[in-house]
Structures are given as structure tokens and as C-alpha cells.
Length: 291
Image (cartoon, rainbow, N blue to C red; front, top):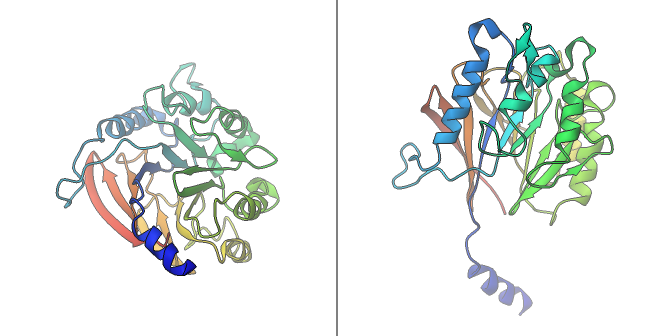
């Protein structure tokens, strides 16, 4: 009787509201500045700002909602710590912290949820990591953070998001993100089967020079048994979709070349990922999900 009642109740529950977000990687603000990297990032931001209300490709009467936020999977700056704040070449430019303001009140009109990549601590600079630590205090959606204040997670409706910055690892520049992943999955999910989206910088099908196969398997052991509906990665500067231990992986192309990023929508039964390139639609993927 209890089972029948549960089935009757769930059958008439309203559909889940779609969760829309954008995700980019490798903006490298300040890199190749003489080739107008700053201008390319500004044009990518302008494309993001203008996109809500546009029709999705090959989708009748389906338009892009205002995104909950923009996720950025590492290599936020070129190399120099000045690229975070915006002063280099002897004058002020607009660094990452200016162009991609945390609360959506800058040039980009949406809240930003960034993580660091390998270029963000070159030359022993800690400015980007310190910046993320501070921005975690002011996120538009409050986040739960790791003990060191760098890695964080939050919920948008029924979807749980986890930022692991460089990659899920232990000591060194991973800054014990694997510990946070384990703790977060065990303690911060609304329910055991809650859908989870993870993003970080290093990829799974390559990047072996950057993190080991053993580290990857340790990460999988932490994720195993949870409802991981997608992992987004940067670093490779290419667009791809594949599976790792049957988890959908989306490689994000770099933003500072050809204004590339993904538009994502989570509906009742699927994650839809649409690619933007040079202000146009340039492909899509879809993966089913279990709520």
C-alpha cells in the first residue's frame, strides 16, 4: 500500500524546472594580449549576454533561458598574476576579476563560478587562488567550501554542482580537492540519488602528464555509487564528448579562441549541451539522467 501511494504521488508531481547554465574554460585573460585576447573575451561575454531568448538549434519554439550562472573550468589568466587584477604592460587592462565579476554586476550579467587551472599559479603566484578564496564569500548562490576555502559546491534546484579546481587529487596543487569531493558527496547531497555535475581543469582521456592514472582511479572510487550525470573539463582547448567509467565527460573548448563555450540545460530526463562558436551554434549533445 505504501509503495502504491508513493507511485501515485510521484506520478502527479509537477515537472522539475529546467536548470540552464553556461560553462567555459581557458579564457586565459592576458595571454597573447597583443593579439587582442582581452577583446576576444569581451566579445564572448557579449555573446553570452545576448543569448537568452534565442532559439536553440533544431528545437521548435525552445528558447534559451537566462542562465543561473557561468562556470569557468580553469586557466582563468594567461600566466602573470597581474592578469587577474588587470594591470600589465604598464597600464590598466581588464583582468579576469573585472571581466568575469563574481556577482554578475560587471560586463558579464550573470554570476560566475570559476576554478583555477595550471596557468593560474605560474611563477609561484597565489593571487588567483587568493581571489577564488575571497570570491567564495560573495557568490550569488551561497556555497559550501573545503577547509582551505578553495573547492566548493552548491545546489541549483535539484542539481548539485561541485567545483574541484585543478583536478580531484591530494597534496600539491590539487590542494586536497579529492578529500573535499569525498566529504561533499557523503555530507552535502540532499538525497543519495541527487544528480551531480562536477567540473575541473584537467581532462580524463589525456592530460596524463598532469595527473596520474592512479589519481583518476582514486577519484572514481570517490564518485562510484553516486548519480554523477556529467563531468566538464578544460585544459585541452578542444570540444569533445566521451565516457569514462560510463560517466559522461564533456571537454570544453577554450574561450579565448573563437569565442567558444557551452550552453547547458538540465530538464526532467536529460542534460542538453549546446556548443557556441563565433556567435553561432556549432553542435550539441544529449545524455539521459536518472533523478
